[in-house]
Image (cartoon, rainbow, N blue to C red; front, side, top):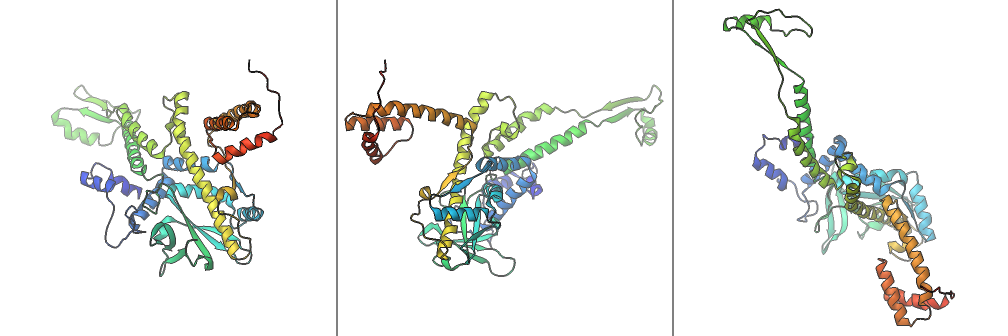
Length: 443
């Protein structure tokens, strides 16, 4: 497959062919869009992209490393999810450590598949005896169709999975009216999803053409350097002796052998002339396109080059923000899986209904920090905020309410965490319950 794609980008292909590969979508008869949405690829293109990304991850070390870096940061050492709700917290512990789920060991492969495919199709299979759900997965290339609500394309109702024999298997989403009666449901999560589309896209999709070009450049350089180590003997003899000498020297002399010749015969060893530095800038340009597609600075994949420490730290800022955003989505996805698993237990009569559907109220998530610099910065910020509160509290006592509200509003605004009017009013009200403390003069 990679050889086929690689040939697309060789010089023997015409510009028209290259243009069609880069910009067009295969609309061959017999294939239709998975969702009938204009921004989604048809089924053939979806399978092609999925297989290309999987093959690149398996065979190209840069592609493998890009996915591994993402997983290393968003999963880290451990992700811990709990709940202040006792029933939900008990279910989370049972679900997380159940031998058929074994979530701590699954997180790495889940994160890999989400980044590699752009979509994750999760199935929850309920045990009606105890209400526990077992998590399994369907790969993106097996999804044949996505059915949505007639008046809302974002409300996904069912998914058709290709089967080896017979009609496709239909999975219901939690939004389907008949989902409660199904032994299993399917959940769908997507990243890099254009507005108006149902399917996401792989983190590798923009990198693959440049990975192929870079692999071809490297292969050509290896072959060329191998050829540079070879040499040819050029033997100059009188014209009348050419055929005779060709027969004599049909086999080249072994290294270290002695050749006796007269003055009419001249020997010369020639090697190919190559300028290895000529390809340096081209290869750097291709690597820059690969790095732009991955979103990671070059020193993260081991190419330090001439990057200084200050430059490296500056380059990590946008990357860490991207990883933090991805980690937030990943932890939300885990909460959503746990929520629907618990709801399935409620439907089976094994658990009590939850008082709310607000995930922020239901779940507590502890995820690894993206950057150690963030931890140091947060520690310093906590120290400064604590000192600011210690200085601010005694100053607020006894002030007019309007002035106290102004000081609190301005202080929290500059801290980067502005409060609502109700929260400010509650703080002003609680000032009376704080014991008085002697305020030292500022000067």
